[in-house]
Length: 68
Image (tube, rainbow, N blue to C red; front, side, top):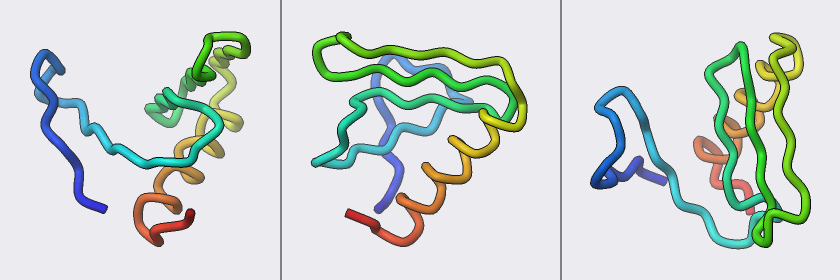
């Protein structure tokens, strides 16, 4: 899956699109992470570096390996 350039995003942001995820927005910079559900009925934020790194590695694995 190739990254997309999205209008309005800062230049240091990489955007990926993937169908079939439970969370619709997942953001991580390896020190903080943010997740949001489709209807915003479940949202979460963490500044725990260990948890944020786990989220980052999960995203990276899905995008690299094409996990569905």
